[in-house]
Length: 512
Image 1: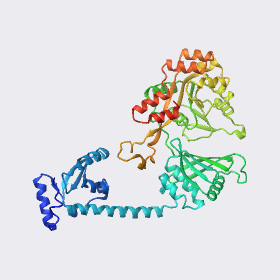
Image 2: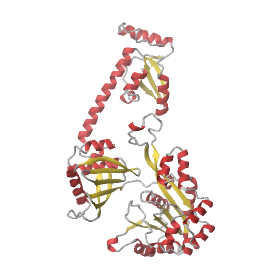
Image 3: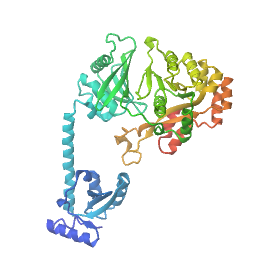
Image 4: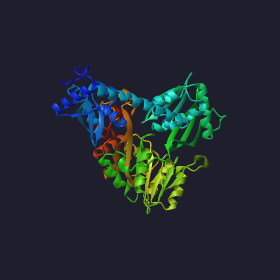
């Protein structure tokens, strides 16, 4: 083994470097004296200090996609395995140079300098930006640790900043017996953040009510409101729901980023067969497209992406929403107002007189809306809407239960999409370079982000015959499979095979 450290321990520095240089020449490798070398912090940081010590190797120079590394021991048994794993992770190649033991120890001492500089910069940045929590809280642990230190007036800013930075869709503040629980909904799953004191809870509740213009003196009935707030570089629209419970008022805040970029339809992650059916259906001059699923299943994102694709100067698009979640240039968007008796049905009656080509109805909730939407879809309008059903086939009995005329329904439906969102496997810790519990990207859950699994049902003549005779749900589901519809579970299992999600996750959302 070429370990020169012991041999050279008693030799003076000049002799040590001279012998190391000779050994490098004899073994046909590059020689480097790191003491005389300016090593950039970002290069040395490619390996952490422990990795450098254990494997007796440290990076000192980057040339293109090649990293030059120095070692006092060319035959360290762990080096090659370590460099291969690191190269695969960083997408780079490595070359080795021989250095003296003293030179290598000097290199290791630079890690302490880097860490000190990093800590000083972080502390300065934290002090400078403390008033803007968006620059302070990035993990669940950050929020949990800070929440006990902030004043009650700062707490709502901290909670909102954490929600935005972690991509939380909802914030839950839940009073219980002797405690108040704070939770975020992350990737569709609720996560505990921290308990807060009753004093903190009352202050947060009062501020939320003030911001959303709710009545402070009413605690025994539900209230809904909204407010806008600047968080870092984002402007957020916060929809507030306050509900009286046995232990106090529960608060749920839904976070909508006003500057969120609308996804293109092709970016949603639908399978190719579904994309073909969707593209055919949305190009039809008229007809009804239904998107079904529970709250939070991605229906709104899908409909907005379809509208984004159809939005052209020669096309008139009008949406009826509750509420308007994203504003789209070139589209007329109207929001229902139940207190003014401006419902989906009454809005739809007015919209059809505005000469639209495409109408999006946020949800078909009642008989009137169903009837008007159907008539609009067979009189030259393309109508898009949503329903709350578990499967694509279940949309038909739901419409029939709202007294939709079977012959109109059979002749108007272009496509029914049913969908759920499954969590995506974290790309950082799935390769075992970082163990899941320590992964900051996913917070130790093993998942980061979500993608849809869907059913896309295009009715055939046989299927429409079932609609006309008001068949059972079981008959509709059987026929849907017979005509080639892929179920959500089947779509999910294909994504499992692609390594995008897990079987447990697919079974969780499909209940199979």
